[in-house]
Image (cartoon, rainbow over all chains, first blue to last red; front, side, top):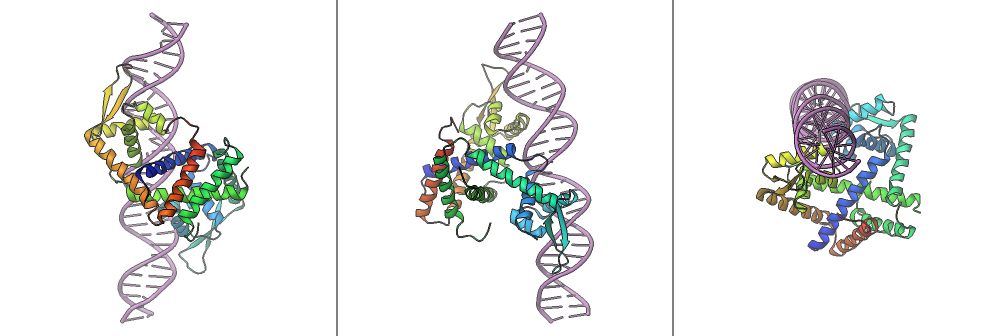
Length: 147
Length: 147
DNA sequence: CTCCTTTACTGGACAATGTCCATTATAGTT
DNA sequence: AACTATAATGGACATTGTCCAGTAAAGGAG
């Protein structure tokens, strides 16, 4: 059982860590696309041939909202919809060349975000941070299915 | 220097950890108040006699938006404004009794959120998680001023 | 096949959240 | 007194997110 003091320290970590990531988000990401648009695009690019519904589920977003975002990405020629042969209600989604380029750029920016996060600490401390976070990851998420 | 693989693992931790906290937020918190309202109330309750501007700065929120939230809390009788004797432009803020009650409740809920986070892992693993996160905290934030 | 229920996707309407700019009043400086 | 800066706030608006209902197809059960 965690003590109240330990719980408070974890809460403190959560607050400062999410604040820091939020700040870096604002600094690092291309302002032409909203955070959610980027998330959807990343999701589509990371798992070929997802359906809109799968995107909504994976990102825990409202189906209608997701649909609108996807349609916006389609209008911007970043994503294409294709008819499923198995289920005529479903579409599956692919990135266009431009979508792939944007994907690569967002991916780069995400790397930059981590580099910024550790920019002011020594290489040794970076290694320690990495180990701490992956330990936490393993404890919290190792017995789960997928990203 | 972190390798690309290490950066990806940290990104993966960030994604899953913030997702998890977000989910727990939704489950745990009293729906009568928005997340930002709760943040403002917690901030006012944690540091007596803040001014609206200080709240906005501490939480990195727009001054106008903060002002509106504070005024809503005042209308709900959770917060009172008092004239500053040093600066007639400023007010300072205090929780009412009801505000203090809500503060305590949100504080409880925040503790519950952490308890949920670790509900399915062994006491040993909880200790390891605690150590990992506080190590990360120290590396990232130990040479800073204040919460 | 027909009826019934469920699922995928979407649009309309709206609610909540957040941003930008201007205004008022006071402070602080010269 | 004149000028500049700051605190607080309201108006207008943009963005983000939610809810509900409708359409079309799938997947049964009989």
